[in-house]
Image 1: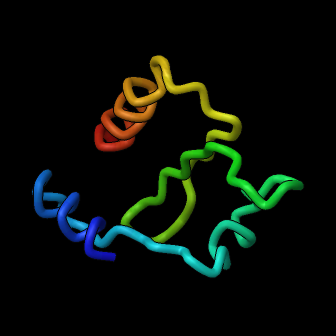
Image 2 (image 1 turned 90 degrees about the horizontal axis):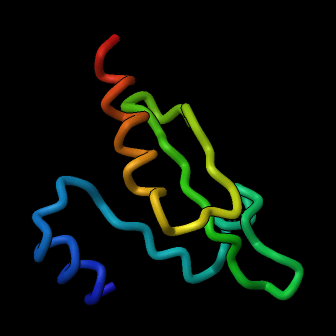
Image 3 (image 1 turned 180 degrees about the vertical axis):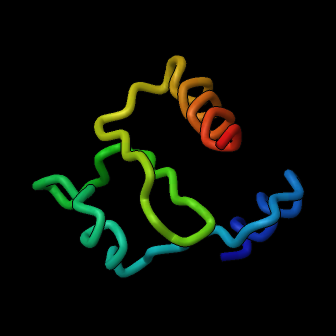
Length: 77
């Protein structure tokens, strides 16, 4: 948890970072693979707590820009 706090503070993030040591959230989102590892995924969750977009088996290159564009488009409505 200490590393999460340092990261959040370093980048002045306005939200809590999750530490899922028991892998409960990973199981609920269906992102555990058969070996118990994590399938790289991104979930965009709105202010009401609803998942508005999910990306499974994410490739790093270009992904952040894709998610930022989605968020910017959502704010237009």
